Image 1 (cartoon, helix red, strand yellow):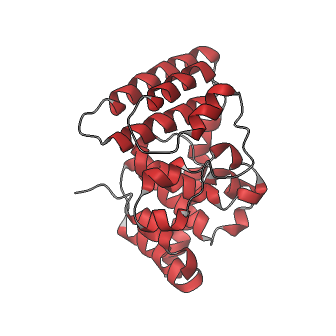
Image 2 (image 1 turned 180 degrees about the vertical axis):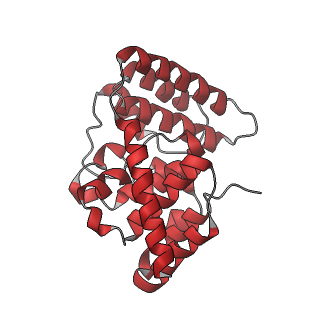
Length: 230
């Protein structure tokens, strides 16, 4: 088991090195082209008639958040307005705050009151991620939410996800590799690169939770749910 884990650790280091290249600043012209392509792809995704209104709403909000993070407020607001018009029984406080300001005037990690663990256990993944304020994830006191947000984001957006918050934690403390956040980050890196989850990789994560952190085991099922349906 130890040799298997060491192999995964080495693989993780390699993927981090490769993945870090996506964070290198690009020229403005390329960024604009990327944004236009991203907008088109996301709009096509949201217009899929097979999706529920809740899934469309979540995708629109996540698109708005991503564009806002990239400092494209005008483009972000388009997706917030699109989400605003979708008929869902959800708290839309985030939309109001976002359209009124360049920053969400919010002190909490949550946009609205929620039992996050219960939502994830019940597989209410859209509602779970909608409750989390991504602009708080870089604050130290909310560090534990980064891996949760990443897992939910990848579950909902699949391989459209371009950034994982969990990268920054590993880069700051490379000796902390045997933690559930790092193991789950490794799992997502593999999935985003090749669209697959390997059983051996899942077993390593599963063993960690059962031996070291039973109270956070609810994240294991979320990780397993990243696996595409066969």
